Length: 322
Image (cartoon, rainbow, N blue to C red; front, side):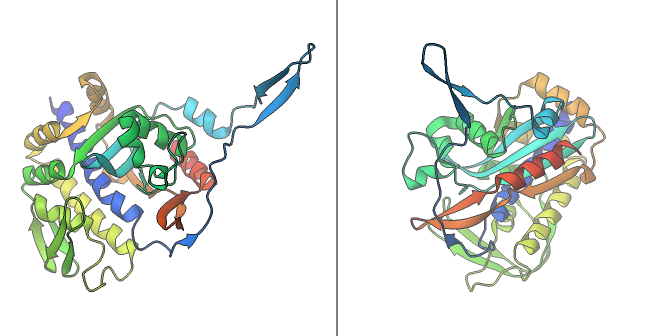
């Protein structure tokens, strides 16, 4: 039973990372967007061959497997898509990869505004990766993220809502953090409406205030972390470490029970049991978080995040070589 519960503690850590990472991966601290033209042209190469009867045949070029394809083929990593839900939308998308041999967990945050064109969906709003869920469900989002990451397989998914994270934190009895500044921000148009009012200093945050801490970017007066996104990342890492410490403590059974209630996944008990067994011995040092390589831009008065395929390939190679 202990091993069964351990995987929920590790999953809990991933959920906290997912909720936090989504906001810092695509925030106001990116470089100022510039107007560019984005193309929907396909990338598949092909050659035309004329047979003995004069008929043209189109065949895909047969190429030797790339280094990345070989790494993926020879790896036993388990890849899970973590989705932070905002109603019927995926507000947070995180790719999590676990290597049972090394105990390493690697997380890549996928900005919800990532530009991703799909056939039959031509309106500007539909060309964002977070639109895939509303049209094609979890499977469509898994396919889109796998495509953006260069063909990496995604084996499972996990979904959690704001209310789920709030209840998970409450099951911990709160999380103690040091709030570096007064945080005051109101947005009545956010879904759900966002009202952040936290005082500077060390305090134990319940679920409601933990969500505020994780979502904070800037104050009503425009102030925020002096070192921009780096400051917010440090604050969230502080929260994650504190939460992990409590999750692995005496409240683990309570936390596991809460996670089970408020999280949806396609993993069955055998999948969870296997992960639990392989995750024994995992430490905080085994966890690494990344943001998707790319840059913010504007197109037709909408914000997009254009991912960098070459840099993504380098990142995936790095992860699969760990």
